[in-house]
Image 1: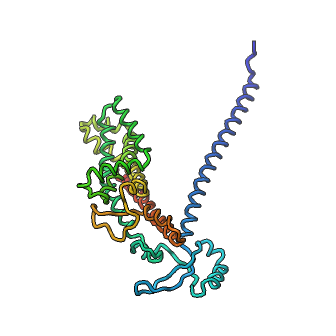
Image 2: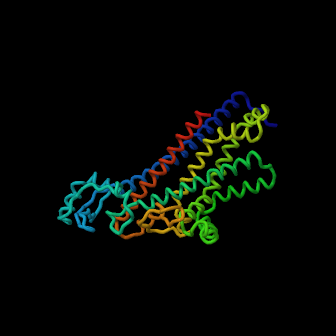
Image 3: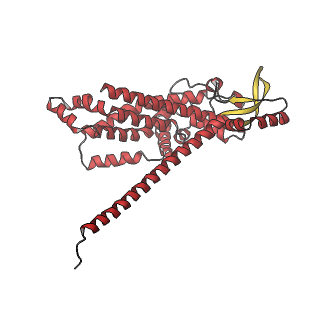
Length: 350
């Protein structure tokens, strides 16, 4: 029969176990730190490459296009190459392009934002895809926010908790992970071919309806989690004072859940504004040299135009693609900034 451990042995065992637990905790912390550093470095590498290609040093000649003297970029070097090896690049420009001037050349400028796409990189702009994206995402937000929030309210506040509810929850969660090309095929079938009389075919409206289908599962899941996080005591207090279910939801639940709902909506819009596959599937064009005149007009969007520039062989079009990425990232950061401001104002108000 084994003897019980003495107090001294128990202390030694406890010390050993505590040391092992601390080691495991330190290993876990370091793994998490490594993953964080990897993510930050990956994002930094992306920004480094994109900014270096959107803001470049270039050998620039002057040429006459349509009766106007325009710059002609014959060769470009990244921003960082120009900073580190400027003298060497000036020498190469003087030797290889004696009529060219070596200077800083920003592909993100006023002309880039106001001009339409062109076969000349220096004259090409981002206007039509920028306006097309803003129109599509604007209509998508107007449709998906009330529909997604209403569905989440019904499922959490009014729906019965049974097997039907569990099936609906499972399907909504699965829809949030469906590949975007599937929504493109669905949009092509329903909104372009089936409801072409309403949408006008391959138009901004059809694209917005398709993006709404893509965004709704994300918004519903985020809104449900936010509503579920509201303490039950708030509902019970309102009901105990004689408020109806609608008054309780409107005056207590929604204000408390609104910051989370807005965050989910912004995340869904951020995904939608960067999607390409669904819009290509429904027939969005890769080259549009005019502004969409309305919701029933043909269109293009920023990711499609960026993809088109990347596929072209000229290096200067790749610089244009990087400039488009900078604009797209700026819009995404602006959207997230607006969401943060709205969240803070909402939290202070309520």
